[in-house]
Length: 78
Image (cartoon, rainbow, N blue to C red; front, side, top):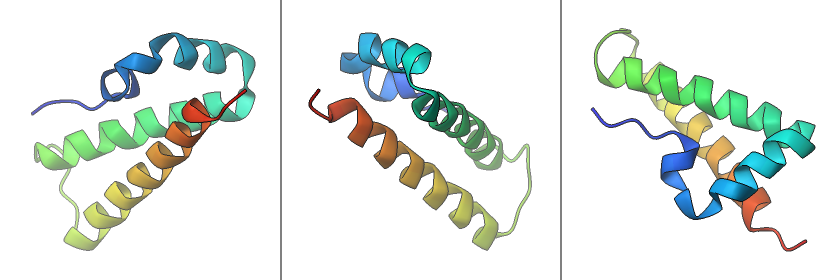
C-alpha cells in the first residue's frame, strides 16, 4: 500500500516544507503530527493495527484536517 507522506503529497512545495520545518515551530509540530497519523493510517490500512471502523474514521478525519492546515500554511502568501 502506498504511503502518503507530505513530501510526496506536495512535491511542488518541497523547499517550502523544509524551510517551514526549520523556521516555524507550529508547522514543525503539525508536520510531525501528520507523519504520525499517516503512519497509523498505513498500519490500519494494511491490517497491522486492528481498530474499530469508528476509530479508523476518526484517525483518517484528523489526518485530513492536519493535512488541510499544513496545505493552508504552504499556500499562504508571504
